[in-house]
Image 1: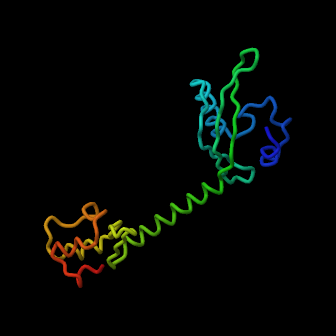
Image 2: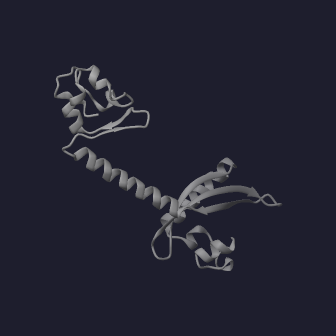
Image 3: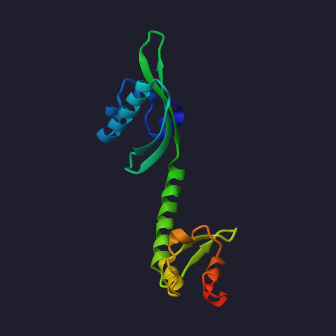
Length: 168
């Protein structure tokens, strides 16, 4: 156990020596750690996983962990590991997902038509209000998100919408 890990969990190596996961962590976490140790031992191959760990203050930290099975000179099997703190990255991912969900909710519930296109001018997204406007011109079969994604916006003109009605 390196100094960074000792400092992070506020315990010298002596406090960890000879202990099991169940001596060090809450039961549910210890069980997860034990299961991943057993998985590494079962395959006798390194195991790469993401783990959530409860800090002393109750906050979760996230770790990218590689568990490596090995044998000592007498043949006893052990699991060693390398763990990298990815808490900042994980929190940023969670925040991004929350913002994406909020944006999607706003866009989908907007009474105004919303069209999104990429730099190549292909449709990425249209909300339900935009579909309602497009379909109000009587196209059969009606436009759906699936039929529009990836298409250029001028497809609306070919389907009977004039440039003044296409809104793009």
